[in-house]
Amino acid sequence: MVLIVGAGPVGLALAGDLASRGQAVTIVERGDGTIEQPRMDLVGVRTMEFCRRWGIVGAVESSPYNRALAQDNVYVTSLAGYELGRERFPAMNASRPPEQSPQKRERCPQDMFDPILRDWARGFPQVEIRYRHQLVDFTADEQRVVARVLDRDAGKTLEIEAPFLVGCDGASSAVAKTIAGEMHGTPLLSNTTNIIFRAPQLLSLHDKGEAYRFIIVGTEGTWATVVAINGFDRYRMSIVRTPPEGLPREAIEAAIRRAVGLDFAFEVLSVTSWTRRELVASSYGGGRVFIAGDAAHVMSPTGGFGMNTGIGDAVDLSWKLDAVLRGWGAPALLESYAIERRPVAVFNAREASMNFGRMLSPGSNPELCDPTLAGAARRATVGPAFADAMRREWYTLGVHLGYRYDDSPVCWPDGTLAPPQEVAMYVQEARAGARAPHVWLADGRSTLDLFGDGFVLLRLGAGAPAEPIVAALRARGVPVRLVELAGEPAAVAAYASPLVLVRPDGHVAWRGSAMREPDLLADCVRGAAPDAWRTTGELTHAE
Ligand SMILES: Cc1cc2nc3c(=O)[nH]c(=O)nc-3n(C[C@H](O)[C@H](O)[C@H](O)COP(=O)(O)OP(=O)(O)OC[C@H]3O[C@@H](n4cnc5c(N)ncnc54)[C@H](O)[C@@H]3O)c2cc1C
Image 1 (cartoon, protein in one colour):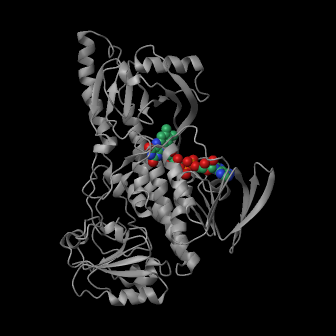
Image 2 (tube, protein in one colour):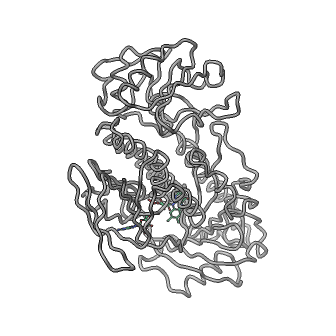
Image 3 (cartoon, helix red, strand yellow):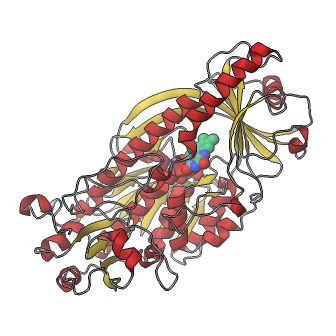
């Protein structure tokens, strides 16, 4: 049994993925599952690929977000004021997946997405979610973890014993503090106040039309955003650079009117003040205790990377825990978790901060809102420059799909040079450590539909010697299937190698035309011989 602390999206994703591999899971969550302030709403394309594997795409697509709402990002002096620029995006029901994926990113706010993950995870009989149960502390030795947990309703403390504990307990993680890792980065980018307000008639009060997000630029520069949080009547206004203690009620109401540009009726539903940070934990744990999600990294929401990075952690850690619990994974497999995932968090957190900097890039422009020729001239300069700068945040396929585990000790490189990771651009390739490419197969499936349970060895070159690799893996108890794809020209082109070994998380472990050291390869990918290729010098088999 794996004990997970925290039933946010990352804890729930980890629980469901572990359960889908047959593992028992207990989650302790100090809250009751109610989400007062939905934070995330962008479910990235890679997360949607995982949702496809988990069988919950339909639930995301039928969530009650307004899928007919155009998803434009609009830059304005106020909603009823001047438009400075706009990046157009179609409504969810009209958008299509990129050619590199069978899925597209989705808009599904946390108060809709978390319940989808929860219902999916709870659908496994071996998953238990204990709400209103708070981790107090824990001890760990080589065999097990013993956690003390407060049952908040009964007022009693109980002990839960498990072979592994994973802290998915968010930005102020008690688990992260206990494992004594330090957080590296910038502890204060800005204080922000988020206000959820209800205004069913808002769309009819201005001439900017439908949008997902308005960024409000005043004479002092960018000061707020207004986001359509359910696509109908609820909005989230974020005011940047507020005092740490937040704003008084009158200031909040005045700010909402200022952002819209006129007096109108609205209802404030909730207010939260929070600190925007860029921090990544120095340690993601080890032995019997790990952290994932916001417990391991916190980043500015600009870009929508936070939860998506955390779900990537969960998917990476899940199959490794399963492998070790089943006995075919060696301890170094778990050590590879931080080696693979930490650089992804560092990259994404940096990019998120730079997005925040770009969002604040319009400085003070005293005449920006003036109905004069000078004002118009200013807007004509500021608007296009801002639109140009912001574009980088809106096109991030490279962030979501292009992360790779180049330095992983459990991947076996092929000697080709690693291209730099791009933000917007993503070229699919089957180098070791990369996400295995998507192409459509003749039977209508995606290649991604082949992955998930155990390893998959793809034979893309007729007669390529796959059997010794399969035999070596099976001899060590590693689950593996051989899949013949030589008759699929699109797959042959995308994978560019006669043999490709894909891990249970859909990342490439090795590719080549033959493997002279199948036993060593099998031991490398299961963590029993980390970095084995270094000792053999056996690198390049790709032809
Ligand atoms: C305004 C805003 C917008 C955002 N938009 C996006 C977006 O569009 N896309 C995106 O990917 N990310 C976004 N993010 C980030 C995203 O919300 C977080 O990265 C994500 O919620 C982290 O998930 P988590 O499960 O790691 O942690 P959390 O969601 O924080 O969940 C942690 C859980 O652990 C519980 N817990 C804590 N301590 C204990 C304890 N001792 N015992 C038991 N339970 C405990 C908490 O109650 C909580 O339920 C946004 C963030 C903000 C602030």
